[in-house]
Length: 526
Image 1 (cartoon, rainbow, N blue to C red):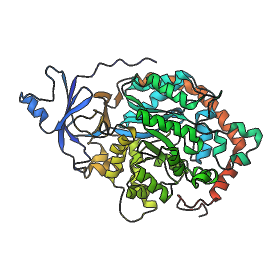
Image 2: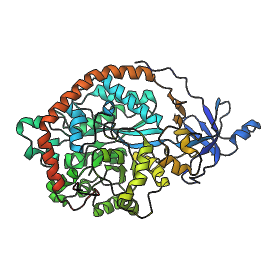
Image 3: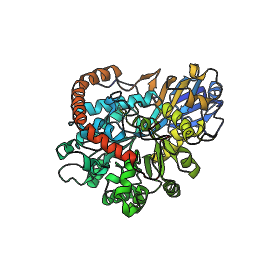
Image 4: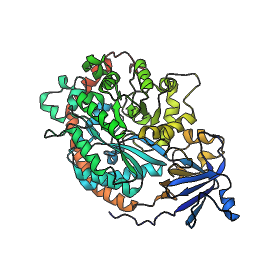
């Protein structure tokens, strides 16, 4: 598949007359302003820039002799590009393959350890497709916690090259573990017959051949960290109960020495909380205590999902400055429960939003995540109160940027920050009549009005079309790749069907276990 040729960006772009969304301003009726972008950054954001240029006035922010592209945005809304703070590129091609099923059954059906090794062509195509979907819904930065299993250097390069070619910003982490999945799910080892245990796996498995995971991560990062200007590196232990103290401690040391964020999953399902109670007596059944003991509970750590968190653990997160990234769409589809949204807010925990896997959410659409985030607190808190629409937009932009280590660089439209933005059509029915930009972004818009998207000062989406790659060629290539993937998927599903009675018995025992809290609104008994 060849890349679509694209001309280099103008040295400066003037976006004039649009309503520029600013969380520090009037979020309901943003002012019309002009944005001057020089190279990859916002040079100025104020009223009157276009008028000054028309009057022949010199602009101190515009370098002498710079070429200037003019973009009229009258009748449009200019918003900061969204930050998808939790995402996995490894199952993009499995969207729409599953109904709502419990998390542990979904893991066995959708994630790389369950499948034969994939081709490098498939790795590249799925990465491009996921990025295209993100971009076309206004997401300009994605945190990809990618599973490459079995490990292959060419697959790492294929992912990074795909992100560079399509033009999205990425915070990339290899998802790693050193404890087998069968040991980390309650009752699997006890219930599933030995003859079937080869079919049990987690989101990622330990690499064969005694590979030193920590050294592998270091090597992969050091060889590539400066190759791609829009790609930064993070660390990705899959989840605390599946990582040894040595691995977590080593990743913590690497984070501190290289100033790198860490992303991990925690308490995504009741099973993850139950295994903590069963196997972490030293930490009083708490994975937060375990993370603290390993030395990584800090502002550099972001915990994905965080559904089954105890009140005392929430206070620990707030005290440590640790972030959470909520993924409400995927949590509902995998029947994981609803995170304690308002308690996190009341404690002062930084909350970001993610869209998670394409096979469990199944869309890379921040509008869906914002709407659920702003709505689901009603399950436990019927009285009026947060989160508001503004809170949801904060989580999708500024708070997400904070998790990535790029705070002050992305997430807002301020002079000096990166020119990552989306331009929305205010004539779309979602915004007619225009009563509140913030509320209509969160509660009525679904992505349909996104017309143009810019990353690093370059339009990557223009008139709803990707400018950096040939989408038609990508679709054709994926159609060819799906022949083998569907065949492999059927083999996975057939194997899981044979194990299903045992898996459901383990799930029922987990459901019946008392762990001291509940994240459902009922018991399943009516």
